[in-house]
Length: 351
Image 1 (tube, rainbow, N blue to C red):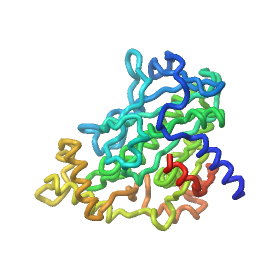
Image 2 (cartoon, rainbow, N blue to C red):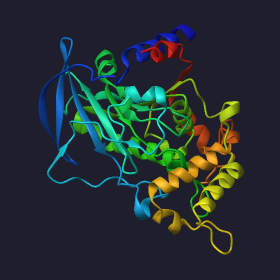
Image 3 (cartoon, one colour):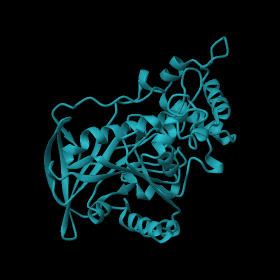
Image 4 (cartoon, one colour):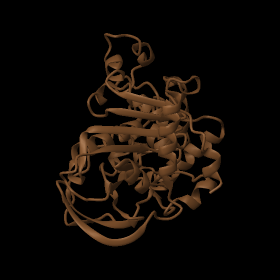
């Protein structure tokens, strides 16, 4: 079993490339009709094969204004032809210096809930290929789907590969007042729902969806394996160097997260006379002010993470794992899970 795990981890990491440059040689642009609308994507030549790439597809409404600090909502169909030829921005963050050379562009914005799709060889709605959705790591404070080019993994595995962005740091894990937290986890789940509903338009099988991630992305996918509302939405999980049930990433941390969030709001002067967080005030602050307030609090040693919101993540979720009568147990036993530890980190850091 250990050898099989290592084999598949090596296949994934050898095949899954960082975007120092685009994999393959641009061949032509391609128009493609879907239920959401028409896209303009690109076909690339990779060795003797083709890969079709559709980038910067919105899966959620922009989480700005009244939607800041709210659960994400599925994006509406677009009008006209959506230009899906270039990678979009990252969610707001302070980039890790070593990552900056690996990212196609250094733009950041709140309007970042987008995904990228890599289709191997033939673009056909009749293909019914297995689909893999990559959840990036970065301590839930940094990272982006655009750092990873899914071309080689799509070709080697004959799968459709999807990479996603989700809200990070204060925008994704603030939890105080009427904001219950875990917004970045809700984003991930919404991306899975979008894929389930729309991947047949790209030749994917909605009944064969694997989610996989590394580091905090691995924490995230193992959490999703316990969330009852994911039942029948995802079918396999690959966890690479991280687990939500590990000692350092055990949920809940509700009191700490709420204390940190309160301090962020306090710095922004978004506290009411009754000492409550004013969410409307938080929603109307410039995004960079909100992010700077978070950075100031984080520098004092206070961070944000997954919390028990009693809706997506119940406080007793860990107890339910071993209870055959619980919905968490039923969810966990409905998916196949491959878990292990990456051994290739130093090689990629040297790129």
